[in-house]
Amino acid sequence: MPDGNSVGCVVPQRFCHDAPMALKGGGRLPSFELVFETYGSLNAARSNAVLVCHALSGSHHVAGFHADTPDSEGWWDNLVGPGKPLDTEKFFVVGVNNLGGCYGSTGPLSPNPETGKRYGADFPLLTVEDWVLAQSRLADHLGIDTWAAVIGGSLGGMQAIEWSLKFPERIRHVIAIASAPKLSAQNIAFNEVARQAILSDPEFHGGHYAERGVVPARGLRLARMIGHITYLSDDQMNEKFGRQLRGGGLGFSYGIDFEIESYLRYQGDKFAAFFDANTYLLTTKALDYFDPALDHGGDLATALAAARASFLVVSFTTDWRFSPARSREIVFALMQNRRRVAYAEIDCDAGHDSFLLDDARYHAALRAYLEKIKP
Image 1 (tube, one colour):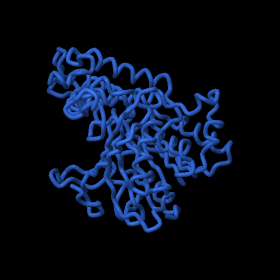
Image 2: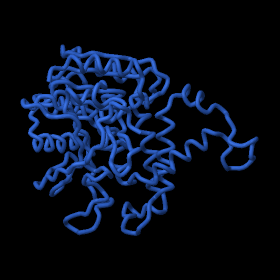
Image 3: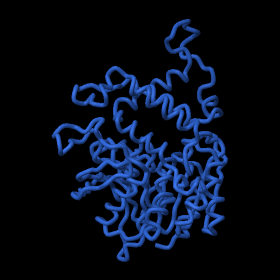
Image 4: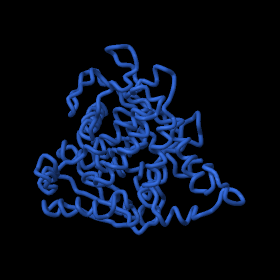
């Protein structure tokens, strides 16, 4: 249940963009819809708005709960609310489900207006740049000329960085948490293995499984299990599970012997029950493609020269998927451009998932930075 500082019961809203939008990869959407939620109040000057960008499996539901499911608190409810680090008594917070998502925004599960059938695999591939462009249309709709800040963890941090490059005049602060300027070869490899698990599922049917009334659950389950291993640190996994046995002893079979096996299967089954496989595929591809330095000869400092915002970059010591070294790359590139940048490296044993947790030092760093932002 939500705590006493929750934003309370929230209602998702819908933004309809009726004009065509060209995509970076050459695709085109004749129109699109975005589902979003807002918390707090927009001030008269419209200067206190903060955009929250979600990670791979996140959504628009950042804080509070929904009336029909009171225990459905938002994925960042520990951070967003009255008196919390991202204080809704000061800021007007906007959470949006990305284009291509499976929580109501136009995506592979949506009807293709040209065929009347669901897009499925025909939904065009997207990039972080496309998401930011769609978010800018939502900002126009809300009458927000400039964001006080754009904040996100992991893939959300990449979107925050892209905002500072694509619309440098429309953002005053970037808060990029557990993020990176581009994926490493190892990260791309993990994404590819996860995609192959989905693509090779017999129920995938070339991405048009929804028309057949089936779900490639086995592939999604494996993809989530692979991903979940990378979100946790070795220390945390050992502390939570170690080599604990599920039953009284070894089963000498291919069933579940260890608690960690049971946990991964549970996480995989839960994920496969609600997430869309095509959304997973296109989102991981967008992760792979993000590389602002690509058009600048690989020089990140040159790429970030376009930014005008101030930055807070946060990393976690045990995050081996997006390690602190990757965050420091961003910091050093900003320093070369003499941009205002603060950096916090948090000693936390939870790995990549640390950005979702209620760690006192992490929240203190965010609170200190956000308190200095003038609406």
